[in-house]
Length: 292
Image (tube, rainbow, N blue to C red):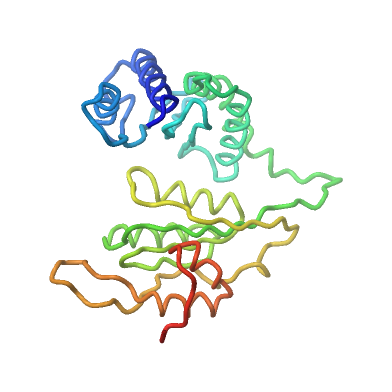
């Protein structure tokens, strides 16, 4: 692995030490993988050959005025701080609109840092200094303007790939989140697991953050399609609801859940919803008819 990645990991360990000194009480910094820092140290020492998992954690911040809490979810890419940090703030006291606005402004602030600069401590300080206004003034953003202009929104469609989706509680969570938010699409269970979610950008991003949080490792967004619109986006939707997609499986090999979904049937499903082009993106093979 290149020296730049090792240098990045060394800087990440340094920043984690600073965070633990800022939040010394047990449980204040909640690592998704309690062995994450140990594995990185072993990798840097040469006693571990494979690249360790990313550092992912949550810090709960107490905002003094008003008396509220914000959970800051952080993911460090292996090349951070030379690539952008992934972070997302949540609070049960914020409505959806203000939570998304807070995260948009926080991301913009972090974007002002130069590559190579550590910025988690600065992000925490920004939240402590600026988040109060998002709680105190949240009702004001809905007051109509006398000279309101048409608002442009981004309609987004995300194609998400997972090695498998089996567990009943996970399947229920995906469906519940999809139906709670104003999104449409589907979740194909089995092996592989495929999720498509479409709707306004902020709703899709909230869906993505929610289903991944806190510890779904083998999942990635393979493709995203977006378009600007001044309407409600209904004419852009390829799906009419958010549902679970159940297809036939290619047999059982004697192990529980060891089966593959019928990709021929899945291709036909994509064709019916004008999405055949995604097949090659998801699986790296050209689409063929189900009987070939």
